[in-house]
Image (cartoon, rainbow, N blue to C red; front, top):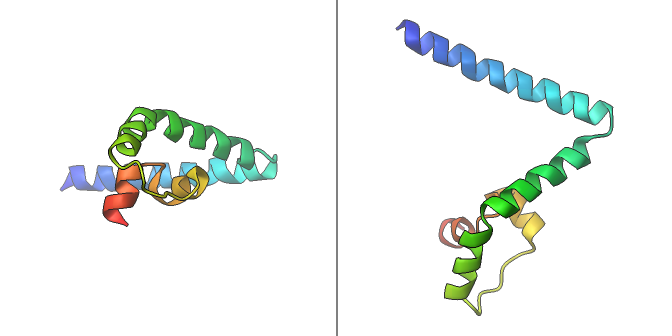
Length: 83
């Protein structure tokens, strides 16, 4: 019982900290920079996986990377199979 309470507190703590960091970034005009860094992270993380997927499905039309990043974290397979 105590473990469940601790886990719940930790999840809430990180959610609150994320909100504080985002508010701080917006206040100082850094939101776009952080978003670009996050986009680049997911682009590099999924690069080889997406390249292999593109080779397997050469005629498939995909939306622009940034639009896919917002919804599917730039994972082509997740977009295609999960819709």
